[in-house]
Image (cartoon, rainbow, N blue to C red; front, side):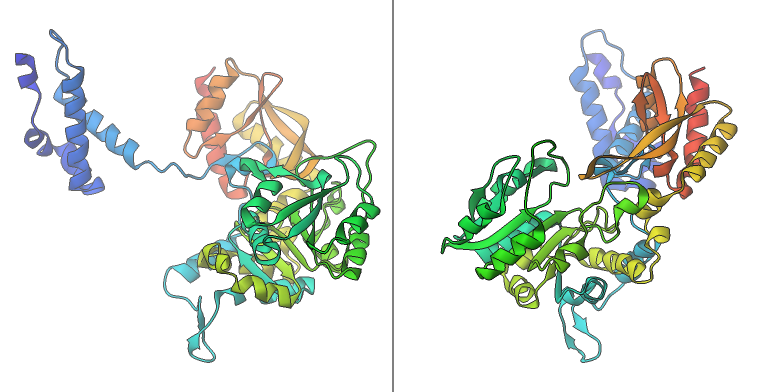
Length: 453
């Protein structure tokens, strides 16, 4: 085992120039840990007759180890898939104003829970509330950390140990295994199913709400799937009318929560927040990071008496929104108030981008790259919104050897490029590539594609 004596000591390595540079970048403690780990790995793998790695190799291993340990797993990527609300890629990118609001509010202290006019403690729940009320006409508003939390809070505060009526066609499951029946069970509410998978009638609701133990009627929008064929269900207005006649409140879980009519852009009509409130529901809840185009949040709008009840529930503190969310959400809502959502909110800019502009962008990229084919294709909204609906787009298609390997190389780029594979060709959709990412996209594409020739 005399060869093991040739392994440099920690003291020897720490005096070298590469390691002193590592100490400057990563700190002494972490660098020492990396050195000891590398040396221990060499000793543990050693077998009689093996050669000891050269000092240069050991130093490179230490540097690689430190880079690996400190590399962030959450990093920006370029979304060239054409899926606008890509759940795996963070859903809605926020506007530049929302980003600036986060920076301004969080780089120092803020009036998060302080009333500047009265000089005393305030409530964080007021932030963004006035914007929602002004935009939708709701009596009250409350923001929590996501829509799943919003549903859980509503059920816990209003229907614990009581029955909640919901159609079997609406017992949905969204991403991550979030199921309406499971949430009801967790909240303590009791599920009261009516109708069948494909059909529910108004008389199903009428019969159900005649029971004294019914505390709520709930509608859950099927935002991520469709039921076609022999189907029927009453309108929300009809459900509200008979429920209110029996003194039973109605809650509408919209999921995506659009404030703009998606039908204006050639898509199917996504139920809008304003429509639910106009139908007379007592509470409506939806996400902030889907079609609203803001940060992750759960927004609850509706009757002031019920909103105040939710705010006072013990669970409200556990799921409340933080100052980053409230700052970004307020800035996002201001875009709607100023009628500039289509221009300033990335999600709506992508949805409303003219087809000719996408074609022009794609053609310009092909000219810069000197290769690629311009082909017609489809973009999707994604994020559990508008299932089956697509937007026409123009794609750049590349025929390459070993396309899966090229996709892997694209993901290894900095920043990573996420594309898709169609008919053994790599395709990129300009619709979902942000303008400030174009230069990086084209530069990395040139390097990767030229290496595959």
